[in-house]
Length: 187
Image 1: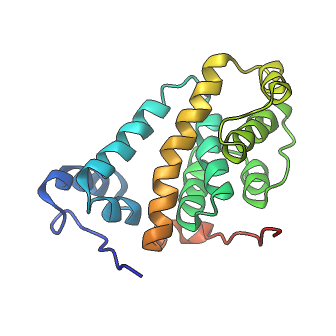
Image 2: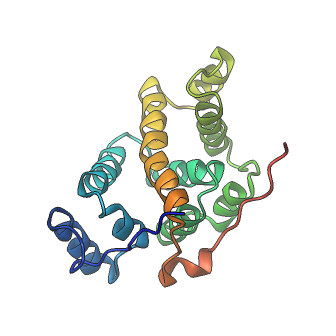
């Protein structure tokens, strides 16, 4: 296994220092994901840029929290599930909704369940989503713009999910109360 360094603003390559300093200032710590991605400043920049762009996709604040959580659960990313569970809690997403996503269970709210189901279809079917599944998503109150927003969310979170798998990124203490382990998948 390759060992990745979890950079600080002081140890990071010059091109990543400002991003880590900004995280330190706004959060009070550098998320281990950022410290690891700083090894390649362009990757850190891409991840943070996509996060900012995803915020402009027209999803509600709750939906903006759920898409990355759904993707991270499906991709079995322990770091991102813990981090996005914490961020969802801070954003006042109902614990019942967060726990349903973390458990791979349906969400009671029909529209949010449509988002969960459609996001999973996009991931599992690699974008080859059946017309009936697209229609259900649209009938739930989403638009064609939201379809593309889900694709963007999947792309954004896949960067961090895969990088965290490679680096075995540990949770920061701030996210520790939200630690998560994936359920065993059927073969």
